[in-house]
Length: 189
Image (cartoon, rainbow, N blue to C red; front, top):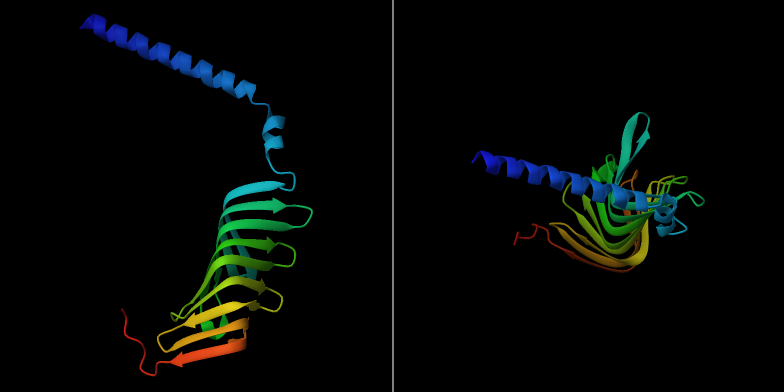
């Protein structure tokens, strides 16, 4: 039994030395310039789990989260994957949350473009669905030229093109507007 412990300790020590040697040699073979050359030419910075908060008057106005971001310094644009945009004070709409498959943030102008399975959910439960949505921070407006659908317990609204003025709490559907009203609300399924 005493010899078995010595043999086991020797096997562990040898395994640690071999593993350390393999890792050290592998790291020495990785040239930092080769790693940088693997990045796309137009990407200056790549991040996982981006969290960006825009503050106004000492209070946070909106927050943008993304699973992945690739920032291009020359254009000031960050390309985003799995985007979540949350507005904390959206006038009559209350707090609003947007989700999309992809997006783009222009850091200088604070313009955000969302693409793919865009879903807007308002604090009171209303939901808006579209394929593309643009946020203009200077005018505090959301807009799209695509088809939209708005669902709430009282309304099922569809149309093409839309502008939402966040501060005024207004929603303008541009064309082909169709609406079904449910005065008593829909039954939850």
